[in-house]
Image (tube, rainbow, N blue to C red; front, side, top):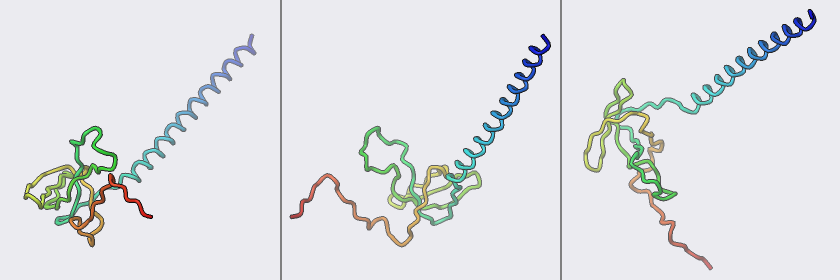
Length: 128
């Protein structure tokens, strides 16, 4: 009888060790996931007179596969400490205040976006 009780005590100790090990592994996995997420989501910094694109939230369900969700370039006017950004639409002069998560900086300063040629992918061209 005494041996049965001691076996049960050993089994309970092993079960506690497995629980603790699982708990530690879960914390390690969460830390790795957080580090990966934080590495890919770098904070954006905006400056006045910088060109940015805005995210189009009113996107239809199937507008076309090759259509971008980012709208025409805007110019940053002012950056607030609350992560809000005041932007100006150079085409019609609208001034908007948006969250910085809705903005994407344009990295190329030497290419003017108005001069980019758009290619129609519907027409096929065959060469002999």
